[in-house]
Image (cartoon, rainbow over all chains, first blue to last red; front, side, top):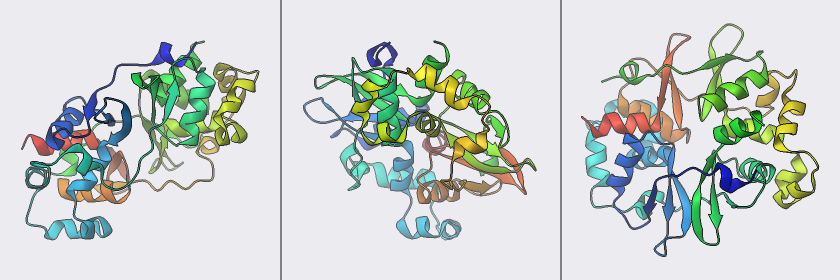
Length: 147
Length: 147
């Protein structure tokens, strides 16, 4: 069994697309993250849901969550205010999040090695520069448990 | 709206329970992680699926995933060998993973602040020492988008 046999279809957004639409996709499909492609359509990085949440919370409140109580705005207000007219690229911020990726013909142990090395909950399966799909840790464990 | 209104039921395992059973639970329900409770039943930490995968891959293969190809064992072999007779506590390893937690009556912005601060894809909602449920980043965004 190889990576391509386990790869599942996964939502992909363009790095220059609308941040609010990406947040809606994460929310509606209850995804832990979305694969972000560059302008050539090549898989570039993953936008985790927690990163969207980070973007909504002012730095001083992240440092001291008890200050959330003194903000007059709700989280709903923050979403409208912070995500309006912003791209996914802005949402990603400066933190360089390397995409965990494997080749379509890699073995499950190779997939596990890459996932383990990068502490990543998912890896992108690529053939050349194209995204074949995504493998989550749970899917990988399920496949190995049922062999 | 408060944390308790968003909290969803989530699988919980005891820290001294069987590691293989925990891996099966993650795999079958396609979960990104499981809440681990201590022997008093209080929520203690989260076991991410990627940590289970890490446990299965030898350190030298994590350092150089290309070495996965030279191992004679499959990932299925590694699961049987490494998880048999082991507890969840062993799986967690030495890395101390602080549980992101909020109180049942915290606001959504307070939940977001804790999630952002800890870069966590989920937070445990507690009342006293008891687990009320769990809130994922996607669920939090969904609630804020629909207010």
